Amino acid sequence: MSGAGAVPAFPVAGGQLVVGGVPLDRLAARVGSTPFFAYDRDAITRRVDRVRAALGGRIALKYAVKANPMPAVVQHLAGLVDALDVASSGEMQTALDTPMPAARISFAGPGKTDDELTRAVAAGVLVEVESAGEARRLVAAGERIGIGPRVAVRVNPDFQVKGSGMRMGGGPQQFGVDAEAVPELLGWLAAAGVEVEGFHVFAGSQNLSADILREAETRTVDLVLSLARHTPTPVRYVNLGGGFGIPYFEKDSPLDVEAVGGHLAGLVAERLDPELPGAEVVVELGRYLVGEAGVYVTRVVDRKVSRGRTYLVVDGGMHHQLAASGNFGQVIRRNYPIAVGSRMGAPADERATVVGCLCTPLDLLGDDVDLPRADVGDLLVLFQAGAYGLTASPTAFLGHPQPAEALV
Image 1 (cartoon, rainbow, N blue to C red):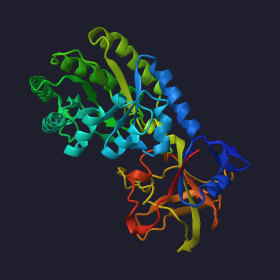
Image 2 (cartoon, rainbow, N blue to C red; image 1 turned 60 degrees about the vertical axis):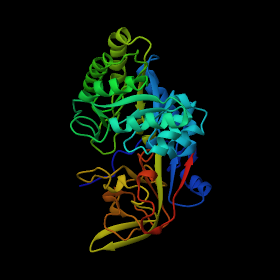
Image 3 (cartoon, rainbow, N blue to C red; image 1 turned 90 degrees about the vertical axis):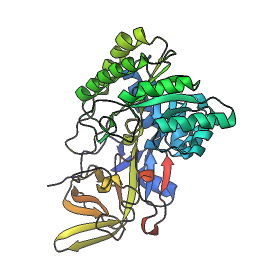
Image 4 (cartoon, helix red, strand yellow; image 1 turned 45 degrees about the vertical axis):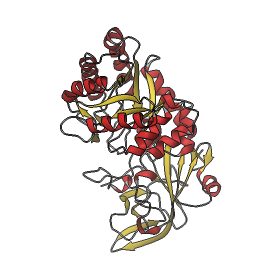
């Protein structure tokens, strides 16, 4: 039996879900069309405040723009966090359009083009190089325009983090320079007259285990300290990654962020500060800051029964919210939390399968979900939609219109 998942704690008024202080039916009228994404501004602010309290005042907080690059969201977060991280020239332009100084923006990710590297150097953005070849192209870009590049080295650690939704470190990886190859690269950069500001180590994402994350923090600090012995100038930048996960499914338990943050604060005070005095220590988070603050709202356009199974056909689908369909990293498909937005708190009196409007059986948003009865015109809400939603989905598939986005 498959359920609707644990519905996150959004306010409810008169049976209506409330997002950003606005009841769902009114929000739909305000947006003007369905489907749409809505992000709760105050929920994002509260999450940032909670993370800052958990980390203490010594550790800087960076937002990974790739989690949700909607310009209004990035503008809002630029006033809350200490820095922004981007993964393309498009995201870099979005970040540069905010009040965040260019010096507080970093650029990570494999496959940076020469044009992207040149633009980053010209803007004064910190480039986190992912390979020796990229480092050579970055130095060449700086020479072409007569500006010294700002450089950090992204490190592929020599350990793996269990329990991560996506493993991005340990073993062979397209991400980062293998830890054992970093000293040689540091020597080459020094010979080229480039001062390396520091390191970025990110081993994996979407982890809900405080114990695993604390172990990863300890091993990451050990690795950074060992690599710092090979830098000819003091390390000024230490990006310890993040990987903080959010609960998507019924049996998921929320991350104990206070336990993770407290442990990291202790490591910084006891290990990093004595050996790397003056280095800025950064935690970089994306999904954890915005994921639970977003909903995807779609309207029922048809209700049908096929050989005993009830189908709710909606005007949205996997072309907007690929992850909820199970086609973005799930090995065994499980339902995201889903609800009838105008009947919050009503008893689940039927079981239905929620499908999108695309002509493919992959377009499945809820499989055998226990819900209050929904009819044509009702609004269904998929939760945990604030990260890796619209921009992580195949929006051009079958030519349907783009959904709207609203920061409320």
